[in-house]
Image (cartoon, rainbow, N blue to C red; front, top):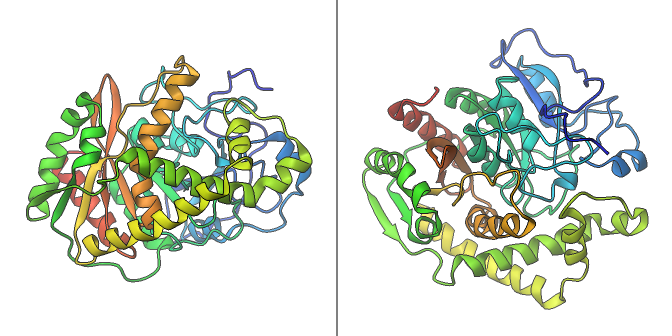
Length: 396
């Protein structure tokens, strides 16, 4: 077990190596990849030594990793992840929890903690993560950088380890809005440009946010409303965010056990705090809970598509809280997880693209503002995020 002193976002040991093109859209930039993406000749640990021990070294590289290298970006290595990507704090007891460069006394956020840490520290221009329940958006908010969860299915996950396949998406981080967009030009399918608006202010998400977070994000919210031609306040979730969380949690857990349960049961791996408990909950989930989650998802997705089909953009705090402090109790961490996933589940259940921009600070730590659009409007959303960042004086 690691002693926790390896606070770098990169995996310890020898760095994975990958050739890159000398020219291309991303020439001159560097990138890293979360250690659930295969890189030929390098072990994919998925954040857990027992996983690494029971799986062969991959002979080929995930297409998404190749796409960045073929566009001229130089690969720097693999980054740490929460074990089996099932957690939001970013903790990893085996390889060391990455530091949050923007708030070193707080967690970096997960599960893509290493990728967020590397970008926030200036160690790479771009870093690949993955997002099932918030695993790119939350570390982006916690570490004060840009992050995108694309439309579900827009970016290939071939050669990547899965958690809950109907929710899993690729994603990436950048410290500058233009770099986040440029990576999207390489990774996203063609199309999806066009005008967006109006702005829809999601009442439940703003009420769910800590007052300090809501206040910190108000100037960015107002600027987004101005740029999008006005803002309407809507009640998106009359069922309450707590119910959204419960349905998402159940549907995700059902898939997580179907995807990884055979390996967990056969291997009986050692897990760090919280991960084993989440898999035990997934194993013991009542059948009716998964079915209810899936049924809720269908209706909720139709509601979202109806709202967003004409180009409207949902705007709300990426996370209701700044990153929890490193000494937060398990109970405090669980509470933060529940109130956070109630919001991140909106895009997760809808398969929607979401960009988090580092729009403010609360309690001495970064907080992000999210822009959410209809499926397939990823390129337009990235362009909007870049324009908003410029207006707000953020790194472009």
